[in-house]
Length: 132
Image (tube, rainbow, N blue to C red; front, side, top):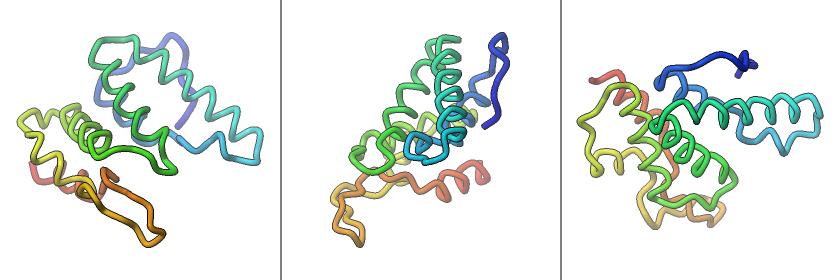
């Protein structure tokens, strides 16, 4: 994600895209420039969240999910963020049940014996965008 002018406002769809593609793992980098760039981008996303109540909700859902990138998100974290992301793309008729099909079902264990319930399948999300 590129640095953003601090006076810029951003529409909800663009904001959701920035939240999706933000480098949520920047803090784990050994490269100080990556860390600083990631920290600035995160602060800018937090600032832009104040644009509207919808922006704030997107921030809360995206950061609640992506900040747990090493695991620990919940089934609900995943499907709520995936559903909100589609809603930002004007797919406003998505149901909770449909959003739940975009993430790993409850009780899903990966090959490392970790619970990955709620892990978003972004390929399914992108397919949903194309199909509507």
